[in-house]
Length: 85
Image (cartoon, rainbow, N blue to C red; front, side, top):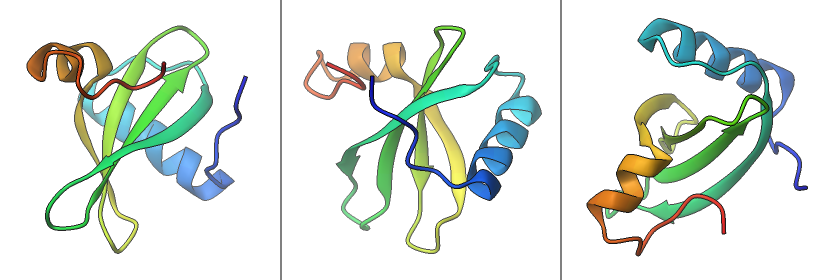
């Protein structure tokens, strides 16, 4: 299984973000870039050890914000963009 490419500070920020929005994530098990928007922000998939999968928007200044669940993203684009294959 792939590892998270985040450093400890980034993992902590991400866990705080999940807590703010009420998302469940026991611990981050892996991350993967899954796309880039026209403005060059990156969509990053995040898998949690408890099974949840989320999509985070990472801007060019490395600021993170919640974008979607992986399931909702896949449904919205007919599985053209998926988090982990």
